[in-house]
View 1 (spheres, one colour):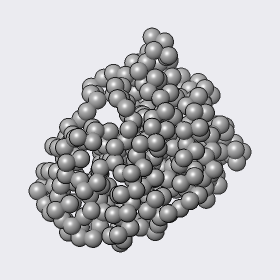
View 2 (cartoon, one colour):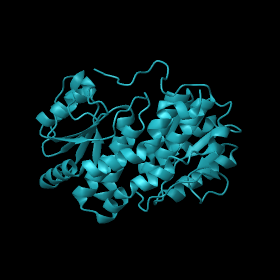
View 3 (cartoon, rainbow, N blue to C red):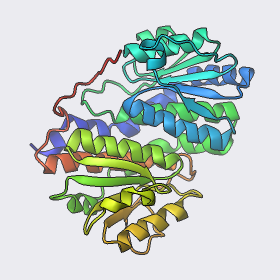
Length: 343
């Protein structure tokens, strides 16, 4: 199996085009949803998602809180689907994220949120899906067909749709400009795959992924993809937490990837990366400020809030090659299927 032939690799390379398509075709939907949020002026928002989509929701939580001062809380979909409870969400906004828009628990939670008083906004790659039918506004991701089991371009387009929505609500021109420059930045990012980190994973079956702030969501997604596509046991931690217990399992050569955006958290994250390297771990960091860890090239976007998007694109390129080097087909991970419909 050659790496160029995997569907996952083809879809990773399609990310810049998929984002460009979203930017060209999604403006009207984004604008209407942003106007609706502005009219509501919510004191808080909630999110409904699972898996990679929940990592998007975590990213949007940080963006919203940093950009608008509006907190986003994640709601467990089982509250509605299994426990049949109703929440009072009067005056709030509910962001539901699902690539397929089919999972019954996500649909039921989004339905309950709307009936509980929330303005319901769905982000999905299928605008005719059950999730879209229970939402006040649907943001079509315009990612195009995604065949590989591992979500890549739908993750990126979900993140872009979400941050674009928040930028329009906040009427933030600097962030708007950075978002519209993403296709060009992503074209470089998908061709930056970190061979040094791949080499360090040879013969290793465990790894830590670290992040802080918005990049912590990217760390979560990276850990999931290591497990999903490479059968590597990966754990994601905030750099603020990894030294509070998890560090105990770090031994000589233990691999760590620290995913840093160019923001206020970069110095703290780089410091933890260096501390782990000093303990004997093999640490890589997407920051030029590290002294003991190995720096990885990162495509910066000109805005701290969009840097995580190019980081995950480069990670996807790396993890696909890692899977191929281990003789694993990332398009068909064992025990998994493309759409998981959880009750």
